[in-house]
Amino acid sequence: MAAQNDVNPQQVTPEEFARLVKGSSDEDIAATVHQAGTADVLDRIFEGMEERFRPEKASDVDADIVFEINDRGDIHSYLVAIHDGACKAERGAAEDPKVKLTADLVPFVKLVTGEAQGPALFMSGKLKVSGDLMFSTRIMTFFDQPKA
Image (cartoon, rainbow, N blue to C red; front, side, top):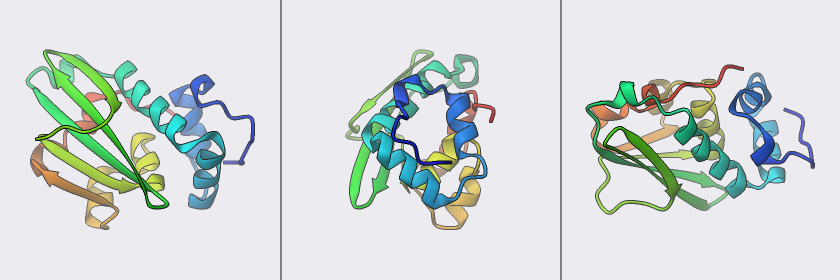
């Protein structure tokens, strides 16, 4: 993942982002995200989650999911609300989410691009889960994963 000054997160498709991440070192991933702007990249990732939502995979789901991404001491919180067969993602949190997932920037990026799996990140301590642990294992199945 070559760090590039001209990466505009709004112009990168999820597939292009997955290709950039695939096989890149953690340092290269972090450098590229930082150069493009962490908040802008995260905004695009969560926008992509809305676009890639598969309502048929979440037909029985009525839940608020909070993601907390730690980047160099800054916590970026996002709420993914799945209600009535629709998904809405935005910056912020929920008072009583069904589950909260906490990860550092690079493991989170690897999770959403399919370069790492949630259970492996959880078992290695790179993904923390509070709330409904069993439900947390289903979350990524609600979204099409970008193909690198």
